[in-house]
Length: 185
Ligand code: IMP
Ligand code: MG
Image (cartoon, rainbow, N blue to C red; front, side):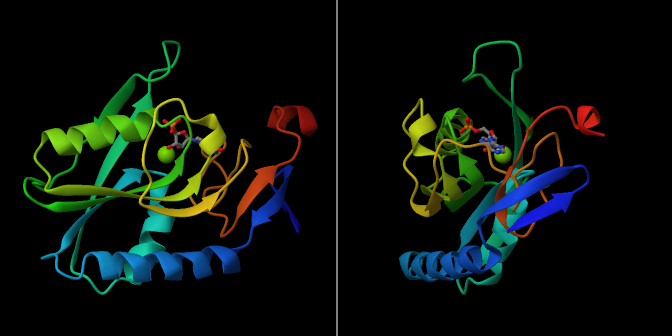
């Protein structure tokens, strides 16, 4: 399937139906793993994780509290330097934390955030990621709940953006002809 969005074509890679079926499975796994927990703090990484996070959390029976981080990579300097733009508001000391991310690419963002959560004394930290671009990994980050492993492609939709666009697509896709939008007018 290809969809025209503004001036570009987006080709579907993973359908909404497949994503939702996979999220059902992940939710069952998470419920089982946290059966004996007194509840989890679900921490999403803004903005991309929000779409996956809502779908995942809606399916859980375990008790959940919700919080967010926002990060950004320093541009123009070495990759791997990650800035925290917005911190969590809840105390995570001695809590079971479920970190939720849209995609693990090089792994730098997640390694930084995981390290911070552990440093603050979380009892446990597990990671749920909708997509895993394993080939692009530069630092090792174990994913406890992974939706799909994908090739080293730039993808959009289901929270993932290209210049802040396409996050709202209910599927994961690839933008065909990623040039300057203005050039294609
Ligand atoms: P990292 O390289 O693992 O630190 O990933 C940093 C961030 O880059 C992710 O959280 C995403 O927001 C973004 N990112 C990585 N790959 C893609 C992609 O294929 N499409 C859109 N955003 C991406
Ligand atoms: Mg992100």
